[in-house]
Figure 1 (cartoon, rainbow, N blue to C red):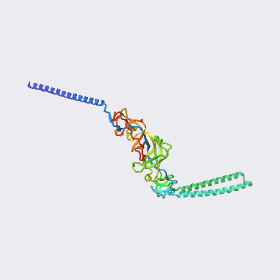
Figure 2: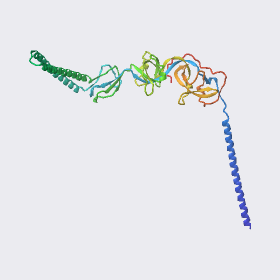
Figure 3: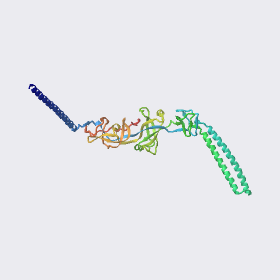
Figure 4: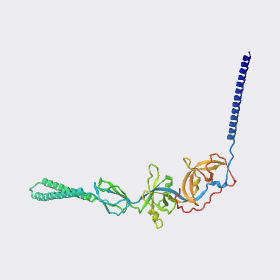
Length: 410
């Protein structure tokens, strides 16, 4: 009996402990759920609560107003020699006597190399012998024609025989003329074995070596005249409308930010745009003066240069280039409309230097008087509410006359 009572009491205590454990777990779960719900409710209230408006100073807003700018177009491209030529083999044969190399100066008409002339000299002699044989045949035909003319007058031969003799003389004369033309061709081929420089300049490439057998039109040397260099710049269709002959540009080598710039002048405008890009090629000739001769002498064909082309001056709506953002497919600015930030896509025009700062014309996307956030504000989300620290309208930047742009606009 004592053992049964003790077993029953232990059994009841175990059940009570199990119930207490279940109650503790349920209470903990209920408290965790309540805490999570309260936290979510707090986050929802914070999300629904509108943020405080951003306060901007008057200096952090710019007004889009007309400004007098010197209109510059950024240009770039590869320099090319205005006069350049290839020395080619006009006849097939072995190359001999080529001594000049890259960098050597040459004169127009200077003998540079020769193609082995053995075969060509033999062909000239052959053509001369054929011409002599044709001349002999023509002489025989001439005597026969003169004799038959006399015989026809005396009635010894028929007119038909005289016509045959005349035809023989015509054929002999044609053969003689053909043989003489063959002599001229052979003589020209022999003359073409000598390779001469077509222009004054310097050797840019040596494309063959002595002992090589060259075919007709094989390139041997490339010669360029470094005294006259020109830039071929590709301009967008909208920019090309502003370009005229005689406009000037300031150029520098790519990556060169200091030192004298080189002046160039628009000398030609291609009448046809490129089919692939619709860009229009414009050609600028580099000028040589006493002050820029050293800078121009440092330029070589094939170098990449960049600069600005001055196309005039005008009153245009303009903004500092730094306020234009390019982290989207189209350039845009952060404008202030109804006290909120909006991102407005803009089309950019010519650029210019004004008071040491790069300005760009706004051709589309904003109207006059629009308020634009300065670059110092940074990127703001669209819809951000903004308040100004003063009720006065933002003051436009000074519109003084620009200094002459002497450096490429980047």
